[in-house]
Image (cartoon, rainbow, N blue to C red):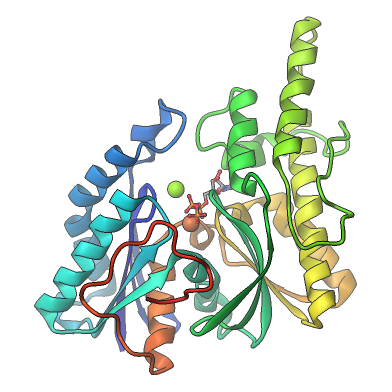
Length: 339
Ligand code: ATP
Ligand code: MG
Ligand code: FE
């Protein structure tokens, strides 16, 4: 069956169309430039932009796939978590299309969709696998027996998400919002061993993370140098900060694999686009005999294809569609894969 996925949890209006694990279209409209001058996403602005972008982005996806709306067999939509008003636009649109076309509706979890999307590139997920979800709002390690049915949290950040730390440190370094991709780029010209920043919770034996101490340490380091009138080599600061984050992430991801006797690791979410994370994870997985899967960067950040993919898995698993009165749930827990 052909599944159309709608993603509006943050500032990207994403539409994807898949058949099974084959990607037929993936279109996106972003309101990121409208938020840049505020240094963060403004919820009202994002909601408004979703409303304006919805129809044209769906039309572009149908064009890309060479399909008509009436060809679609099911609609999947992000039901949460995310910004309440932004989610509402996608959920309302999905209900309207489901009702109008007479096709089933599947409300899915955005975080589980970040995990499911990898199947478009690397085929069906091994059951079970360990998934590390690292994004703008979340940083978690998950045991995934079956992404369409069950996701078990093993650990998560106790303060900032990894992406949030990237964005805050970028701000300290005077880089534009969202800062993750800029840190990644600038770090390429610096040394990850130039400054020894703290690795929070590295050796505490848990599968949890902490990034707020690191963020503060970077800010203090920069302030101290500035006060002393010293010039800061931004690439070294960016690279050393990045190294501290990815060192802890990869260390804990492999700890989770070892503790649960799982030999397949997946990394998903926006921070999975980070080039140093991808390289270090590959190195450490190779050494540990763990198979690593990371989607291409364009599928790591928010998109509609990830929602369509999880919807397609739900259809394949014979899971009942969602009722037409499902709410948008801004704090939908990761354990609720579909609503
Ligand atoms: P969530 O999925 O938790 O609701 P979100 O949807 O806002 O949050 P994503 O789109 O999955 O988050 O990821 C966005 C985050 O990823 C931002 O914090 C951004 O800075 C970060 N990011 C994107 N590319 C990179 C990169 N190359 N290196 C590091 N961070 C990156
Ligand atoms: Mg975004
Ligand atoms: Fe996301």
